[in-house]
Amino acid sequence: MTRITASLGLLVLLAGEAAAESVDLELVLLADASRSIDDGEILLQRQGYAAAISHPEVLRAIAQGFDQRIAVTYVEWGDARSQDVVVSWTIIDGPDSAAAFGETLMKQPRRAFGPNAIGSAITVAQALIERNELEGYRKVIDLSADSANSWDGVSLAEARQTALMADIVINGLAVLCRSCSGRPNSYDLEAAFADRIIGGPASFVVTADGDAPFAEAVRRKLLLEIAGTTPPREAIAGRATEMP
Image (cartoon, rainbow, N blue to C red; front, side, top):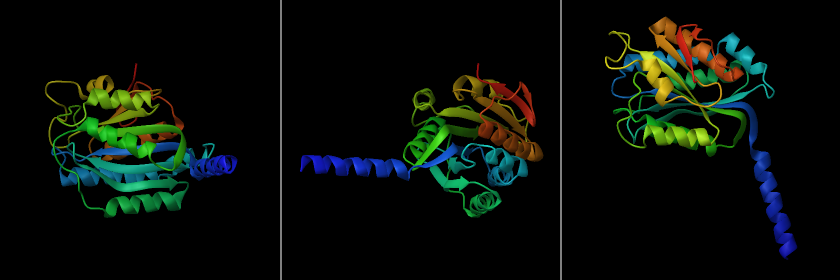
């Protein structure tokens, strides 16, 4: 009986392993929906990602991978209790799946609000990676924000370190506001991202300033993440800073 039970247990284990779908990349898109982001900027971010994921250059990059597919989920974040999965894990393997991802993204209402809790957002993103039924060659959290501050919830330092120890790369998109000087008065936004947020092999920060540059920055960033490469110091659509 013990031998039969052990054999059945092994079969269950193997079945569970077989259920995990192989992809080249598991990518969590963490989009800023905190109180400094108005509805126009929410729309700007969503349009930028919907356009980028369907761009022919991005689809060609996906097709060059070993598995020829990536998995993406889009999450908007606000305070420590406000993280909304706008689009759940979706396999992107061609124009149809990319278009479907974009359509779902544009249809959903905004449900995340509140002051910055970047640490909590990263913690939620890590849980989404660890609890899915995917097996990605690389695992990346991609955080966009107009500030590097984290006011409540899980500390940013703790969340960052926990994700890095789990072999998850964190990249950043520093979003400069459209109606003001765009930069915090007291610090360099990109430098703060590099110091406090990003980490892991080939991690980087890309800057987006304005509507058209934002869409281009998102596309550039996706291409780098799909390829798993670090950008040069000066990148398309703004400055890119790699992690030392």
